[in-house]
Structure formats: structure tokens, C-alpha cells
Length: 275
Image (cartoon, rainbow, N blue to C red; front, side):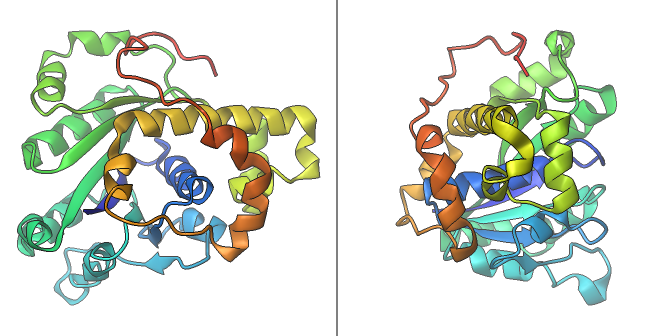
């Protein structure tokens, strides 16, 4: 079954673009088939960093543009799709799913939806995640991604009874997304470099490259923990990396590919991640 991977967070500045870029690089390094869809018109940075084969789509409640996102479903029938969503798009995405019967059509065509919801730990961010869980009531797979680059203590969520009940009821994976060092991120952002190109950048130096490698390794372990891509790839044959990223990916993928996936019981959800 192919999956539409929505990289969500609803608020701006929560880490959606970084998570989307990591997921694209994850597919390149693991030689998994994917199509990237850039849906953020105001800041299409993921599509700019990974332009090879990138598609564009717009989620809109306006009638004239309401069909623009339909291509996402058509693409997902053949290949897993990674969609970089903009902020404040929940109403439009929800309208697209419900108006078109996407969940019902997905059951017919072997397409499912997964929302990777990255959160800052702030009250509003958590409430938006709860809103999404309640809206779809278990019909859409959610992954709760805790951004440790923006919050280094998540123990306060233990007391959020509604959140904990929904996580348990819908069996939502909870992932710890590691902090990415500011120096390396600024360098990649400024030059619009893919992670594969960053691994080859002489400007980062030996230790800078090591920090990049460590970040990706931790991020890949978190993605593995959700077991979503494993379910997806079991239905399809792995493809080769894109021509743009294949050569540069080889230099840094070996250690990352052999990293052991984190198990659900190996770490307390509220233990502090090292950055």
C-alpha cells in the first residue's frame, strides 16, 4: 500500500520543512521510492533543496483551486508521496479529504494517509495536534513528532490527560526528532543544499560533517521507530537514488543505513534527548 505522507504541524516555525527534508534524504539514502510534493507557496524551500522530480500542489478552499491537490492522490497510487504542507492549512486539507472521499477511495486504490505532526511542546501546538486526532478519529494514521530542537523537556505533557488518552486509543507513535546544530543548518539553508551535498561540503569541516552525520543518524532512527516506511516499502520495489543525489549520497549513507532502529521500549518518552 502506498502512503501519502503529510508533513504537518499547522503552525509556522515548528520544523515542518526540516522534517520534510530529512524524510526526502531518508528515502534517498535508503533507496526508497518517493515523490516530493511542495505545497508551501510562501516558502517552498523543500522543493528548492530537492528539485529533482518535485511536484507542486496547492490546498485551497476556493472552488477554482479546490482540485489542484488531486494530483497527490494520483501520484500515490504508484509511489509513496511526501507532501510539505504550509502553515494554517488544516481546514483546506481536511476539506480536500472529506469532500473527495479520499479515505474511501484510498481503500479502493491501496492508498493510505499518514500525518507526521511535528510539535514544539507549546500549548497551542499540542492543541492543534489534538484537533487533528479528534477530527479523523483514528481513520488517518498520525505520528507525534516531538521537536527537541525547540523544546528540551516534554514531561509537562504527562499531565495532558486528553492527549495521553488519544495517543493510547489511536496507538500513535511518539518520535523524538533531534536538534540540528544551528551552524550546519544555517549553512545548508543559506546555500539551499541537500543533506547529501552538505556531507560533501568542505565549508563544514570535519567536525561539522560529523555533527550532520550524527543528526541524520538520530533522525533516521526516529523515523524507523514509527515503522511507517517499512510498511510502505513492503508493497513496492526500492528504486535507485535520483541522479542528482545518488553520487553524493553514497559517501555518507553506509553508516546511516546500518544504524539499528530504536525500539519503542528502548527510551522513555520523556527522557531528555542529547542534541
